[in-house]
Image: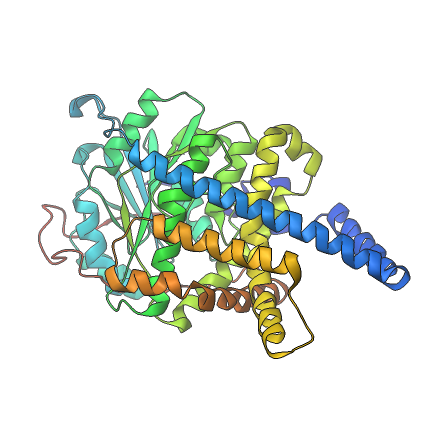
Length: 471
C-alpha cells in the first residue's frame, strides 16, 4: 500500500508558476493601461493607429508563417535522417519504470487499456503501473477490478478536495511513484510496445539535463468522418513534423497530454504538474525549458482516438484553448525574467510557436468573415497585405499537410483541401474558452472514449485478474 503525504497535490507547485492565482496585478495593470492608450489613440489619430496595428499584425502573422514553414520542412528532413532506435543495456539491468494512467468515466475502454499496458516491453517485476481514479467513479473501478492488468498494477484513489482535473490526479500518482523514470498514458492510448525501452535508452545516452521525452501521437478513428480527419491531420503535422523540429532546434516544446516520459527526480524538482491548468502538458514542457531542462522526442508512436463528431470535438478544443491561455499567462507573468531564462532566440521562437497556438484560433473566424464580405461587396478589397497573408497562410498550411505522414487515404486528401472550412470552428472554440475562463475556469471537459479495435482486448495478458488498491 502507498500512502500519499499530507501535502495536497493541487498546491505543490509554487503559486508564481501556477495558473491557480489567475492574472498577476502587473498583467492586469498592463492590460488596462494598454487598452486605455489604444482607445485614446483610436480617438485621436485613428488613421495612424490603424496603420500601426495593421503593420504590427502583418509582421507578427508573417513571422508565425515563416516559423511554421521552417519547422515543417525541418520535420521532413529529420524524418529522412531518422536513425535506428536506441537500445539500452540488457533487461536484467533495467530500473523500475512507473506508468501513470489517470482514469475518469472510462469503463468502456478499460479492457483495451489492460491489453495495451500488457504489451509494454519491460520486465514485469520492474513495471510500476498506477491507475488513478476518482473515489465516486464506481463504474470504472468495477471495470478495472474485472480487467486483466499486468501483475502488480496499483489502483490509487485521488483524495477529494482539490480540482477534479487530470494533472491533480497525476500529482497524486507522482508522490507514490516508485520508478526512476515515469511515463503518462491516457485511457484510450495504444502505445508501441518498445516505447519505454527507447525512452530509457535516450535518457541513459543523453545529458543529465534531458528531463522529458515525447512520443508522437497518431490520431485514429473508426468513422473516418471529416472532423476526425481534420483532427488526425493536425496531429500528423504537429507530432511528426513540427515538434521534432522544435526539439532538434532547442525551442521550448509544449508537451502533448500523453506518452510523456520523464526522469522522476527532475519532474519532482520542477514541482510536477499544475493541478489547475487545463493543458498541464504544454505548461510543464515550457516550465522545464525555463528552468534549464531539455525536452526531446522519441520515435515509437502512440495511437490515440480522434473525436468523431462536433459535439465531442468542441468541448475538447475549448479546454485546450483555455489551457493554452492559462499557460501563456503564466509564462508571461514576468517577461523580462522569461527573456533571461530562454535567451532572445528561444524567447522569440516561443512567441512564434506557442504564442501562435494562443492567438490564431481567435483570428480564423474574423478573417473568414472579412474574405466573404470582400467577395460580395464590390467596393471592398483585401489589398496587397491581405492577399499576401491569405495566400501565404493557405500555402503554408497546404504544404505542411501534404508533407505530413500519410495514413488515412482519401479522407486525408479531403481534409487537406478543406482545411479552410475547419479553421473557423477553432474561433468558436476560442471564444467559448474565454467564456469558460470567466464562468468556470477550473472545469475539466471530459472527452468520452470507446475502444478502437486495436487488438483482441479480451485476450489474456498473463496478468493479475484485478488491480491492487492503494490509498
